[in-house]
Length: 151
Length: 143
Image (cartoon, rainbow over all chains, first blue to last red; front, side, top):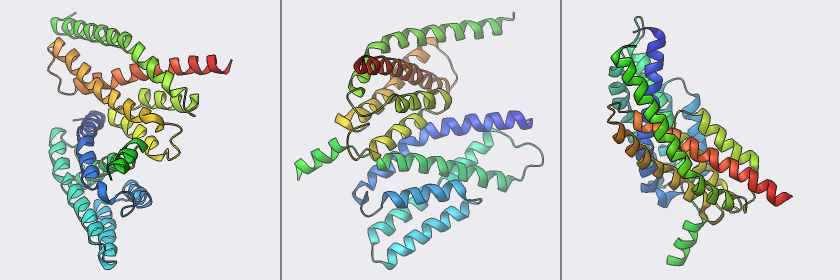
């Protein structure tokens, strides 16, 4: 497969994957809705987004998340610690997704397999986090009002 | 022209026709959203921003993520969160997937990504109508 064909196929696969996995990220956000936005703040989510966009290795994302979990544990905020651990698991599982996607477009000759897998894993994690942040912040006043009325 | 190329062109023409028909159907619904949106503090830059994003991205999720973020940030409930307009629009755009599904089923086409691509095109069409109506209605109001 030529370099150009590879890049095109890779892009198309990632785009379709991102649209498919938006619902999963939304379920994650909804499943932890009770922690938003007080226990898990918007600033923390934006911080996660910045880290995911800027790191050079997937391990750096995991390190950041583990650090958040440890901080929460030290502060006795076990529900928050669980959030970060759940997120670590959710993003960690995307490595399998990256492996499956990689099989659909053979790498050009000379490409390091591990580098390609790690780069793809990072990219998928970035898209997942983009969906996660958007859905976590997606909290309409109408919803808040109806919740208040229920109380 | 080979038989295969002829079939590809015929499929493309049928697809474009089906999407154009749907686009015309969306006009009234898009106008209703525009009517509601001119009653918010949103200006045409923001509506144009959404339209531009839709026409440049290759992901439907980018459009709905964009809207979700703006609904979430509108704590004053004067723009995208006013009277649930942003939430309704997210649902509307997500619902266009059903139209995309019907179009693709009608073509009997096997490309697994085609439904997603048609969905994206339908979102663009819907938002194109919405932006046009919004600008028109906004200008009318300001006259």
